[in-house]
Length: 98
Image 1 (cartoon, rainbow, N blue to C red):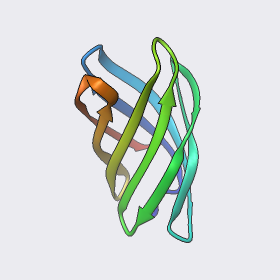
Image 2 (cartoon, helix red, strand yellow):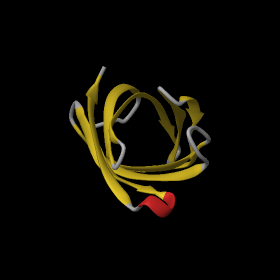
Image 3 (cartoon, rainbow, N blue to C red):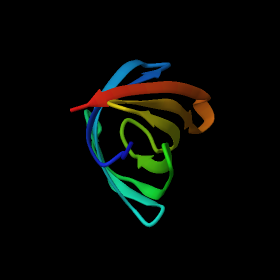
């Protein structure tokens, strides 16, 4: 199923659950969009989609600069996977179609 659309997601980070809205668009194996949350709006970088699998990066600037590296999978109206939190290890994330 397509990743296109809006998703309400939660990242389970060392700082607790972080909620955000993902707005995704796919085409030609590329994934673009934004992640909107308490830290502001982040553009998705280096986005890729391959079937149900998705990946992208985002550069968090608040409360400190961190490169977030997401991998995940779409399963119907659910999405989720893991995210590398720079030097802070890995976390899981999950969400549902908005």
